[in-house]
Image (cartoon, rainbow, N blue to C red):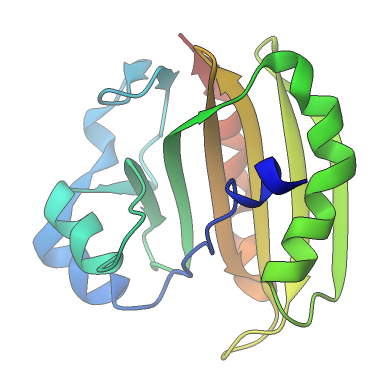
Amino acid sequence: MKRLRSFVSTPRLPGLGLSSLLAAAVLSASAFAAPTKLGTLPVTLEPGTKLFVLSDAGIQKAFPSGNRPDAVFVSKDSKLSLSFEWRTTKLAASDLNTMLTQFPAVIRAQVPGIKSLKQQTVTLNGDQWADFVFVAPGKSGDVRRELLITSAQGRMLVLTISSTLADYGKNEADVQAITSSLKIN
């Protein structure tokens, strides 16, 4: 359990200054017409035309302290974010089942007031992921966060999807488009 505690960093919510970043620090995702390698991450995906990718400066503004994601996508209304982190923490593919049973306690300890928490294993383009979906109170309504975690080159790869419950439904098709195109290299 001690080892799992180092896996969690509190995901940031969209709307915390992201809307002001859109004009200055975002590139249109429409430039990604075909599967695209995501920077230095071992990931290829098709973000589609409805999501925007934050530049390095935009990520730095949106996440001013400590653990910054390696790549962040936001919806046009900036009410949904998808952030990728390729952590140095070692994670073997065989550890995903253990994570499914132990990680919920870590989430509950670090996120106050959780209203619901669901965990399962999902397969995205042949890759196994541990999937944790939880709802907690937020400033502007209940917040839905999803942590998708897998092993990539022996390290932990985390995709965090964050939105209010109300806004998630509006952007769910865009989330499904990215996750269905997501491939670990």
